[in-house]
Length: 58
Length: 219
Image (cartoon, each protein chain N blue to C red):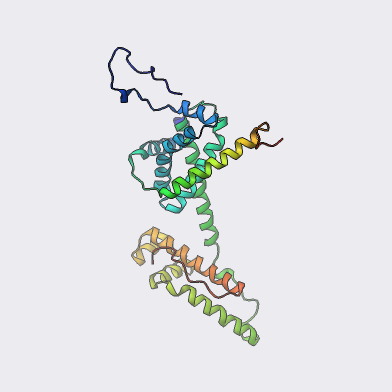
């Protein structure tokens, strides 16, 4: 897959894999807020996708 | 959920702590699909540092990095239920992050190009100033006052850069050389001045008192 997409893809993938070694301070409030927002979104999505659940659409 | 016997030698006396193995992505994915919040949280915690670091390095702006990180994870977790596992989860998340970052960069470039299209020569007076009514003159003075207030924080070199760009149509590199600033500083400054002008016009059209000028970048 990497050779099909060219050297740019490989460089970016390498950069992505090496990002673990790069210490970047994320705002902990942002990180936690995003986590809660995502989970709320997913709960709603699960409820919408499951018509049989109490929160689902019929 | 865990497979304690997966990689262990049954005959060795291993300390209790080393028997714990982190669940693999596949196990977390299964737990997530079953609606377990702890699986979702562990997946999120596992990939957040990498995604955030990657976007930060590519975008070099905290606000953009946060916005793009949010977009990436929203796309990831919305699509995870249908993730077939044809590739590794890490590679799949990387693909989403890469595409989202590139979309953001393209959006910024388009916005910059649109602003670059606003040239002083594009504004044509409908009639000679000499033929304006007193009310129109008063309106012009009001407009000039708003502009002066908005542009009060613009430094001399920024004015020079703006004129070099829009009067002489010089490239960024040449402007950087003449003003002895970096290319990024010149770009940022040009964008800032244009934004101030746009805000000044919008403020004047809205008829409200001019808002305090925001700090858009390097002065």
